[in-house]
Figure 1 (cartoon, one colour):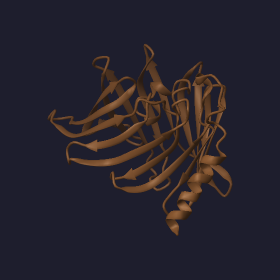
Figure 2: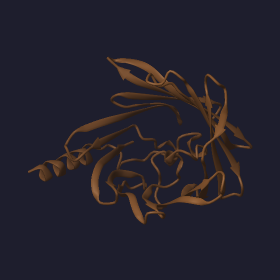
Figure 3: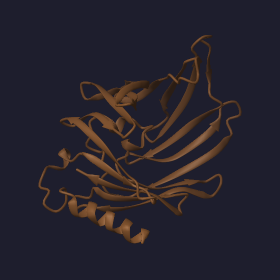
Length: 256
């Protein structure tokens, strides 16, 4: 009975979509307007996107909201809010800087109510080649002002606009401790037409294509697997997410 209800919900969402075979708009104007999440417990959640042309203004979740900030066509920051009794309460934010059109650093401000000492965190990106980027993270205690580099830095391998490998390397010893690989399809990411998103290489939304799997080389195990159905323009219309590569955790419907 539960399985039949889940299939009915999926069919209903697919039938109600208005973005498929009759879509005649230019590819560059295709943007996700909403996403509908279904979990195996049959609860649903809707995520709403707002834009100024191809610039993303905000993403609204049931209990959270993210605002994006631009300078010209470049994303220079994000602000995160919790929704508490219908009101937006700011919790943290990020600012981005660029060098020669590439992401150079991210500054985070985490303001957790449970931690009276606000911690400033920053990531620094060094481009070792066209396909290899070093990501270092530093933390600063707000009271002592002492900054320290994290125990590990990452080596990011990027190919065709997609992050395909992440190595965690011990800062002191230089030993590669953890390795994760990522596989993609050859179809369009829902977020590829958002101005400035492709530069945020730390964000999965920056990928040109859709991630199919995340694999831990260290433990020889899949972290997750995703299956997709696509519309006639090659954008995902339905995504099924398998946690650990086995269990269906979330089904997502994309509406453009």
